[in-house]
Image (cartoon, rainbow, N blue to C red):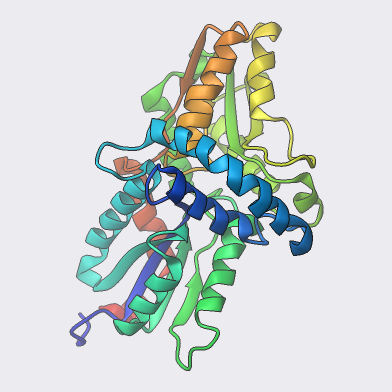
Length: 333
C-alpha cells in the first residue's frame, strides 16, 4: 500500500456531456458550450457563431428540452449522468485496495472537466489517467477532451503526469460485454436485419483523416462475427446528422424507412458507439426511430439497451482501466 494518506494516482472518466436539467435554459447553456467547440463544428467562427447565437440557440433549446424531458430519470439525473456515475463508482470500488482515486467529468456541462482536473491536482494526484468513454476515436470527441485538458493546465506551474486511454473499439472485453448484452436482450437470428448504429460524422472529417469510420466498421464486423450473422443479415449505419453537408452513410433514419419495403419488417438495432444510454439512443432510436420504422410498414422493432451498468461492462471497464494503468500499478501498492 502507499505510505501517503491519500492517493497520488487517479483515473478520470470523461463523457461528452449533458444538460443540468431538461429545462429550456439548461439545455440552451449546454448547447451553447457544445456547439461553440470548433472540434464539433469546424466552420470559420465568423461564419458559425452568428448562426449559432442568432438562430440555433433561439429555436433549438425548446425542441431539445422537450426531447430530454421524455427520457429524464425520476431521480433528477439524465441517463448519461446516472450511468457514468454508476460505472465510475464500480471501478472506484474495484480499485480501492490499490488506493487509486477515480472520478468522472463531462466535456460539456457538469461535473465540469476543468473543475475536476483542478480538484484532483489539489488533492495531490501526481499521475492521472484520462479515460474518454468513447469506444471509437473521433476528433470531435476524444481530441476535444485532449484540447480541454491542455487548456486547463496551460498556465499551471505544476501538473500531473498524464496518460490518455486508447480507443477500445476492438478490445475483447468491450466486445464480450456487447455480445452478452445483445444475446441477453434478444435472439439476433430471429430478425430480418440487425443494424449497428453509430453516431454520425461529416464525411469531410473522415476524408481529412479521422479514423472514426474505420473504427466503427471494425466494431460492427467483430460483433457480427461473434453473433454468427451472415453478411446479408446486418448493416452498419450512422445516426444524428446535423447541418446540410454530407455525413457518413448509410443514414440510420433513412434505412429504417426503407427496410420494410425491402421485406425486412423485423429489425434489431444495436448502438455500440455508446456505452451509456442517452438522448441519442433512448429518444432518437428508441422513440423516433421505432415510430418511423413501424409507420413505414415494419412489424417488430427491438433496441438493445446500451452497456450501462451491466456486470459484464463494469468488469470490462475495470479490466480496461487496469491495463491503461500498467507501470503505475506497482507505484500504488
